Image (tube, rainbow, N blue to C red; front, side, top):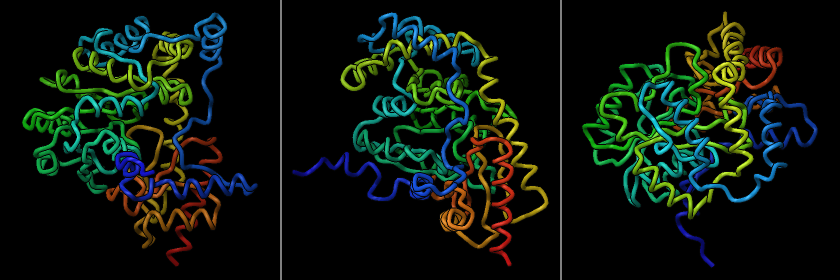
Length: 390
């Protein structure tokens, strides 16, 4: 029997970009000591108080079906958080709870795009973006954000790429680059969306990890609330990656339509997980800052560990839990460098090419190991680069 073209073509017939990471995992599983810097997974687990709330809810009987769009109490809490952060009036009718940020990206593109529609995203990009677009039947199209411009997309490139498109997907603070889009960049994005009548899908899962500058949700810009779908989750803000609780925020009529999609797709998020999410949000910004603090500290470790040499140069790390390192001075591609590094030093990193052509000649380091281990790995990466240049 033949499978559908939609499911067989999700990756576009190519690699999913994780081959070096999978090789590092295989080495580690075989007993080889490997320093894994290849995955955005907190090295601290979900706070025990959140787990206690989840356990109490489950043991209290909240294990049945839950309302498909989410409990009203959680939708209200998410809406209040968004309104407080952005200044945009937001109610529970503007929020649907979904099983994680990835499900939210999928739902947002289903809402914005018909089969065959052109859906634009910024390169470098999170590895699932083009596959998510293909999965809804739309046609992915990348617009390059160049390293030499701080990975900020240019207005002229956006204008060209979005002609005839239906949607534009952005991510700030950005994975993999660590860039935060400037006010000028966001204004350009908003202008392009208004001019070309685009849906803007704004992935803001790293909005609590801002080290330099400020995060502005484009939904707060003039004329954008009615055309912006904001994707977010508790995965990064509260170290709840495995709990799978996220949301889309947008116009009420879009959220109502997503209710229909969720009814035929995920059919809700576990009630005890939603109760844990409500508890987590109730801890306020102090809890979010505590989860983010190690990455703020490790950002400086990256800068200090790579100072005094020019073969491995970090791009500006304005936000998120990653450092994008330029290794072009070694004469190697990011993929070749990552594979050689794993062979020689047993350090697993992601090749920049895993995130698109804009990441060529770079590697992405996740700042998700203990401080001393990170500093040691970075020094070894720089030392390894030095051996290549001899």
